[in-house]
Amino acid sequence: MQRARNHKNRRGSSIVEVALLLPIFMMIMMGVMDFARLYWTQSVVRGAAYEGVRAAILAETTNTQVESIILSELSIGGVEATPSVTVGTREPQQPVDVTVAVPFTFLAIDRLIPPLGGVNQVTATAVMTHER
Image: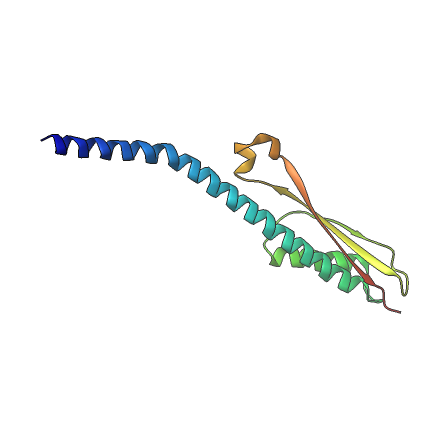
């Protein structure tokens, strides 16, 4: 009879342990997902800056066309934000730089750890030598 009672007590303590650990585990998982989203956004922004500078080194492209290419790359990558695009001076045989900055907001971390929250900027710069 004593043995059956101990088994019930253990089962009850297991439920309490899960109830205490599950929220902590979920917070960690949400943080991991937020940082994965940040890494993805950084990767897409770097790719967009690279494609933008590839277009900018050509003599026949305009800054508007470069910005359009960058917007297209961001959209393809799933980054739905309004970027800030800066195209450097475009002189023959000189380095051209393209900088892309996108606002990024953490979804879970923003609510769990307010000092890390708010709008952060994900920025990437790519440099290539202008043709001609």
